[in-house]
Length: 70
Image (cartoon, rainbow, N blue to C red; front, side, top):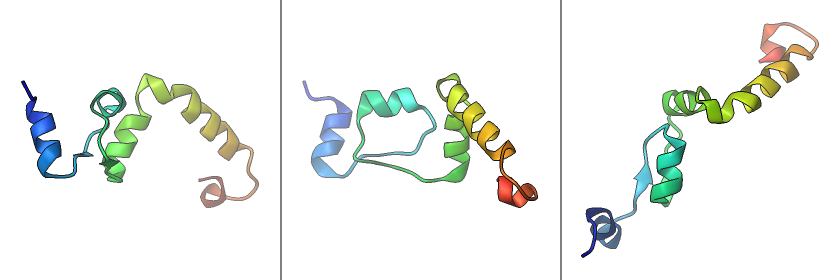
């Protein structure tokens, strides 16, 4: 029996509009959104904790004002 997702894939392009990285891995959409609020939600998950810490540390080492660090 064909799933509803596979039926949709036969008719259209499936894209992800979620911050759930595991769902993206599992469902394998063709593309993902670039909605900043969804990306921010994904970056707040434990999966990206080390990456975010590294990015903040890198920014803290930059010279200049806050804008240069961001």
